[in-house]
Length: 152
Image 1 (tube, rainbow, N blue to C red):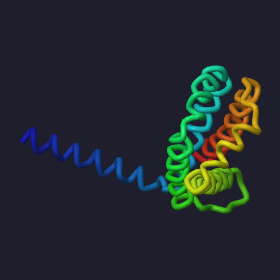
Image 2: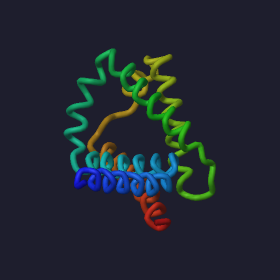
Image 3: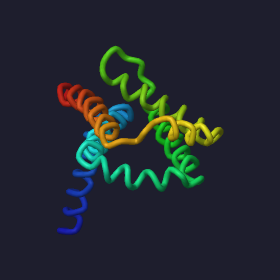
C-alpha cells in the first residue's frame, strides 16, 4: 500500500510539473537560455579578456576552427530561428535577430571559411575589444532578462 501511495505521489508531482512546464512556450525557453548565456559569457569576456585572447589567438590559426565555429553557429541559429522567429516590437526581437545572425554566420563560416581568416586579420583582438564585447552581451542579455522578469 505504501509503495502504491508513493507512486501516486510521484504521478501527481509529475503531472503538476508538466502542467507548469506547459505554460512555458518554446520561445520563452529560448529567451531564458539565450539571456542567461549572453550574461554569463559577457561577464566572462568582461572579467577575463586576456584569457579569451590567449585561448583564441592560437586556435584562430587552426583550419578546423572556422568549420567548428560554423557548425556551432549554424546549430544555435537553426534552434533559435525555428523556436523563436518572433518579430515583435519589444526586446524579445533581440533573440530573433541574434538567431538570424548566428544562422548567417554559420552558413558563411561553413561555405567560405576564408572570410573568417580575413576578418581576423582586419580586426585587432585587444583586451579592450573583448571587454566591450562582454559589455554588449551583458546589456543585451540584461535587457531580455529584465523583460522576462517583468512578465513573471
